[in-house]
Structure formats: structure tokens, C-alpha cells
Image (cartoon, rainbow, N blue to C red; front, side, top):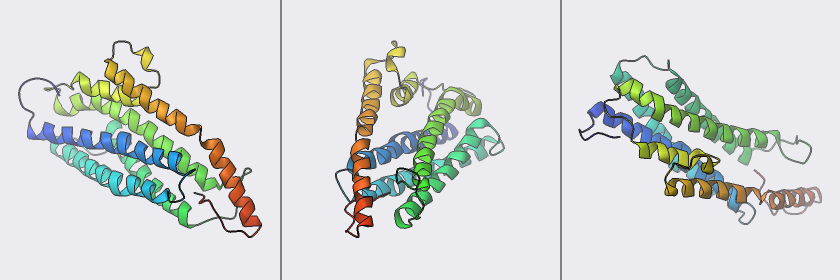
Length: 228
């Protein structure tokens, strides 16, 4: 945040809330998504690194950030869960909890029903919900940086432009559409989306391994690939 005068205790708590939630939803959680995307076709034990990252590391960040946000709203005197930022924060928190329990359910409980192609319906729900969380968190962070901070603090200390640049570097899909951004921001954005794109190239290998695993099961052979 900008200006030379120090932040008040209230502003400092709001700032910490913003930092923790940003790293929880837009850094730690995507890293948890990248882990299975890259490991599952090469390493049978990919589930536990994925679970540790998304629950034991990301979870404390999200729980702490949510508590700080609730406390900040209480201190401000505003009612809870009335403006878009608060409602989205509650929705994200609930979606995260559902996603964690859904992931555990998928891993340990197998339904016999499968969609054409051999995958369980809950697998698709898990993937869609995960991407929805990232998408909503991206919007939520933007709203917090561009709108909510000024609304709840009075904008005495406006958001530093570097914070907004960092958000753009993490989220934007077409960095060249923002030629005024610092070179480092553009490089970060390009690297993140390149990593995600390269991970998608592993999907054909994953599908082939899953098909082979299903055939082996049907033949009574030992399963060589864990299906999520």
C-alpha cells in the first residue's frame, strides 16, 4: 500500500488478510493443481503431494485469511456477507471445503458408474469445481484490490500499483495486451500459463494409462495406475 504514513491496525489486518488469501487461492492452490497434472503420469504416489499441498498447506492459509476477513468486517462496523466481496469470500470458503471432501471421496470411494470414456462423473465435478474456485478467486482478488480496499478503509492508503501488477502477472491470459506492465510481470504471466499449457500436453498420456489400467482390471490383473 502506498503513502508514507504507517497503516493503522485495522488497515494492517486487512492487508494481511489480502496477502494470505491471495497466496492461498492464487498461488498455493494452483500449485496443488499443477502437482497431479505433472506427476500423475510418472509417479504412482502423486495423490499425497497433491493432498498435502491443497489441504495441509493451502488449508491453513484459507482458514486464517477467512478468519481475518471476518474480524476486519466486524471491526469496520459493516454487516457481514452483504457486499460482493464478502459474499464471494464465503462462497469460495464453502467451495474449497466441498472440493477437499470431494477429492478425498473420489480417492477412497469408487462408484461403478462411468461416463463414456471410462471416467467417473465425480472426477469431472472435481476438475470443474477446482477451476471455478480459481476463476472466482481471481475475480475476488481483483475486486478486493480495485474496490473493496478503498470502500472498507476509506482509501487513506491506496493500493500500491505493484500489488495490482502482481495480480495481473498471475491471472491475465494475454500479457501482451498490457504493454505498459513491467517486464517482470509479463514474464511471470507467460511462465505461469506456459506451465499450465505444457501440463495439458500430458493428458493423452494420462488417458492412455487410465485405459490400460481399466483393461487390466477387467482382465483381473493388478492395477498399475491410480485413478482419481
